[in-house]
Image 1 (cartoon, rainbow, N blue to C red):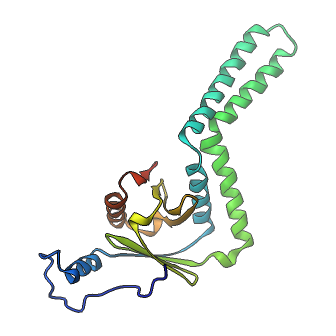
Image 2: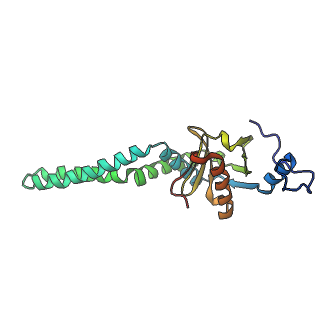
Length: 212
């Protein structure tokens, strides 16, 4: 939905917050706790966003299955090396299994993120006009987003989910439609407040993975 007004400021500064049933009082409280964030998107931000978005689409069971297959492949390599120790082909088969196991073990944590990040940074190098500023305004019940002529007002309860990773905050409008906020753009105190907004509104739909 289109945002018609960036910030609603109460016309009566003497409204007492002791009466939450008063709509003007609620509005004043929201403005008091409002957090405004502005940042210029960099290709590093975009790369980090793509990595987190791709990793979020991989179910936990698939991650675990990949790691288990890697461990099994390495174990099979050691067993093959024992049984084929006299065979001229033993070393080759063993090396292949060990290499496959290593690739599977580090696929999710190192290989996939490196590939996605490099692809994303390459894309941004070719589309530098997309390095535009982003603006968020967070209140206790909703947030406002503005970027490159796009303006939205979204209640937290309308979000599909929210995900916080080590360096990024993803706000999903749909299953595969996230807005992203680099945590470098906010202070630790502001981040704690935003977490409280999301946690109280989304409950189990707010996930934290490697957050600090």
